[in-house]
Length: 58
Image 1 (spheres, rainbow, N blue to C red):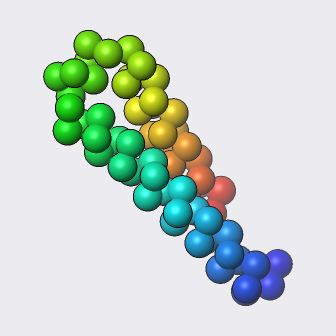
Image 2 (spheres, rainbow, N blue to C red; image 1 turned 30 degrees about the vertical axis):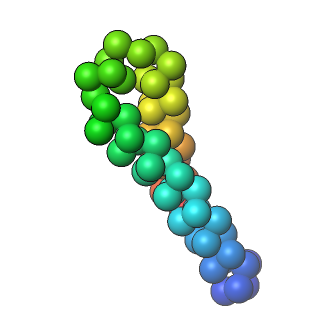
């Protein structure tokens, strides 16, 4: 893999990470509602694991 390809991969990870972090942040911001809303929990946990998994790949 050349440096340009690696920079592209990091760029994609950063973009996705920002989306995941926004999802996690909003879930924590509304923690009282998140605990009562199963849909919110189901969006927060995959975002957390995707963020962790992407970091592990890099």
